[in-house]
Amino acid sequence: MDQPSVFWESTDLKHEFDQWIEEYTPNKTWRVVKDTDLTYLVHRKGVFVKAVTSISQSEGALSQHLTYIFPQLVPEVVAVHPVHPWLMLLEIPGHPLRDAPDQVQYEVALREYAQLQQRMSHELDTFLKMGIPDRRPSILKQEIESTLAEMSLGLESKQREEVLVLQPELLSMCDELESGIPMSLDHGDLHGGNIFWKPENNLPVILDWGDATVTHPFLSVRVFWNTLFDLLPEEGDALWMQKIREMREVYLKEWAHVASKEVLERHIRIAEELGCVYRAISWHTYVTTHRRDKKDSSDKPAQWLKLLLEYRKLQRDTH
Image (spheres, one colour):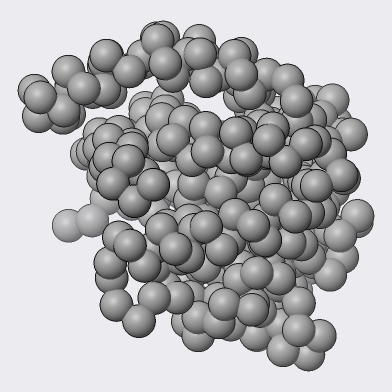
């Protein structure tokens, strides 16, 4: 039997959630869309209401802030609970990018996201006050030093040795990313299911900001690159790398006024590798340790470290 959602172990809390919904949309019937130990999501025509755990406690405040600045690029927030991590959002007309993959739409989404990041680079203090995790390269460096050995325990012995020997290089990568590009906001999970396409205005909508952090903006691309498999006629490393090269050019063009071409290209290549470790730590430190059923995601850090090794080899083989 499935365990109940952690949100509603307290009947009083569930009652409070239902009352909060009733204040905004009285006498409506809601359908449960998702009920896990991370997210409780209900829907009725036109509206979603989402409850999250302390892992994503700042999602409501951040979503509301972004709605104000980028009304066309993020879902419209109807309400954010003043105490609990609950938010109410208008339903987005359209479809997730991955449901009907189209390269032009992926490119537009990437350009719009880059522009959002550049504008948000001036609001780091605001984000930190909201409680958005600070994972700038100097912090990421500390996270690597304290977690890499433990995370690599999930790898085979040879792979573990390969990862551990990379630690000095990974720390050096963090040092290099400390300057040259302004720090900004990382969505944290920028894949084709979290980006909708609105046909009414041919623009993307980026949702689900619960994994956002303050860090080097280019770390965002590592998850996005994985979604590029959606655009391929068949899976293949060579085809994937070609698609990555195309999208790198699209993304970096939006940053051309920020730094030299050499700096931009160096930083994004570092971010593509360092981003694997960054994601491993996200699962290890920011998600799994807070879950009821740790086994549901305890293998994620090792998976991302394995992806690091595979990506480095692929880069060498296709260079």
